Length: 327
Image (cartoon, rainbow, N blue to C red; front, top):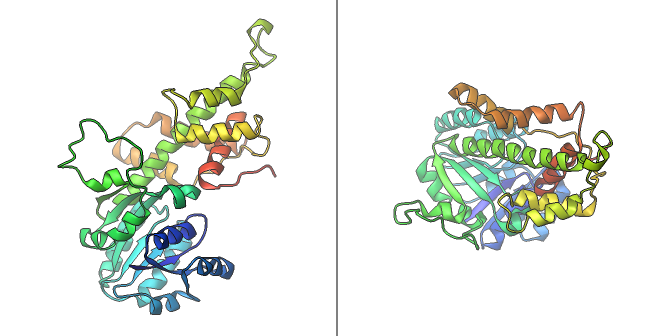
């Protein structure tokens, strides 16, 4: 299959590369001409504009938009919808708000254009590890792009099958690392909650290591002070512990480089999904004590930050390349 990739940043470029590794074709566009040329060097076909991309795609054309949520994505989809033909597919693979997906899908359907939202997890590691994807949209459109999704997904790998899972009745795509979650908006909704959970998990690690580091404080009685080796603690927890995880792996790696994490500011950004998850919980009257506290902790970090906040920054850099260095 041939797909047009718009936005060649931390994830977009590698998505195009992984697609090509599987034998598919990529037509790529970015405002940064150097980014386009880099992908051309890897085998992609470059486009000089969105209109130029249209001329180079097959019918129906498939456009994958991988841009920051909000204005950049909104404007790009609006531009594509001006020249796309009935039957064409527009995919938003970024982190858009799910209600925007619902609105866009309705507007595009009036023109006969199909819309798919793909919540994409994998960060800067996706090229090698694959991308976990949560997809929303019309079944026929989602089935049409399945070869692309299958190429991007991580596959079963070495993860054992879940005991008691009814393999015969279950959707086999879930074990491969991607699901059709439901209609337009469902993919980004599931990814939104995924990121809200991510906030909570990261905050738990950050607070725990803050407590460990604080045990050497001179505010404690001298015989109760421990000078703990955080690097070794992170390492031992990786091996056989009930709290082992990829986030702990990233924490251990950051602490091994510098136990004080001096390269990180501790001013932790949020990309919107944590806020939207709490908002959805309020609409549903579902209590989310941990997720809301984790979100508010990020707000607080921009005023008064702790060692744990530096660990949050280190994890965000580890999985997504997010830079929160000291100013």
